[in-house]
Each structure stands twice: as structure tokens, then as C-alpha cells.
Amino acid sequence: MPHTIKKMSLIGLILMIFTSVFGFANSPSAYYLMGYSAIPFYIFSALLFFIPFALMMAEMGAAYRKEEGGIYSWMNNSVGPR
Image: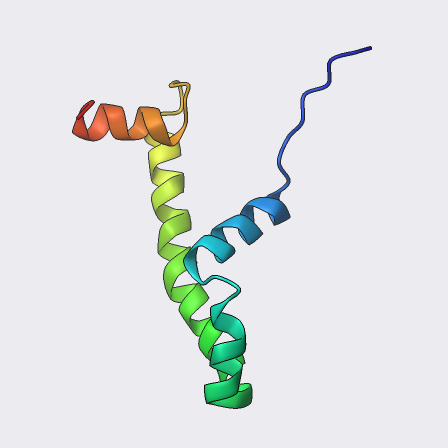
């Protein structure tokens, strides 16, 4: 049986971040309280959060491109182990 390496897709990563930030439990409540105006609110708030987040991740990835470990190594190198 060959050993295959599984990789996360970009859509899966985006949905995981969206769920951790906004949560699906808040969506029905927002639609109940705001109606269809909740849709532009979610789009606007996503842009305000995800664009700076993407720029921050790109900057950290470029600064520590030779490091292994992703976010852990970025934080360890920038603020120290504790």
C-alpha cells in the first residue's frame, strides 16, 4: 500500500478560517435579526478581516521562508519561545 501525502485545499483552508472567525452558529441569528442586510455585512466584515490577515501571512511567509514549522516557527522567531 503506497503512502500518500494528503494536502489541504485552499477552499478547505478558507472555510476553516471563516468558521473559526464567524462561526456557523451566528449566521441564522444574523439573518433573523438583520434579514438580507446580513449578507453584505458578512462580506464587508470578511474583507476587513481577511485582507489584512492575508497580507500579514504573506509578510511572515516571505520573512521566514526558509524556516520549517509555519506559524509556530514564525512566532518562535519573532517573540521567543515563551
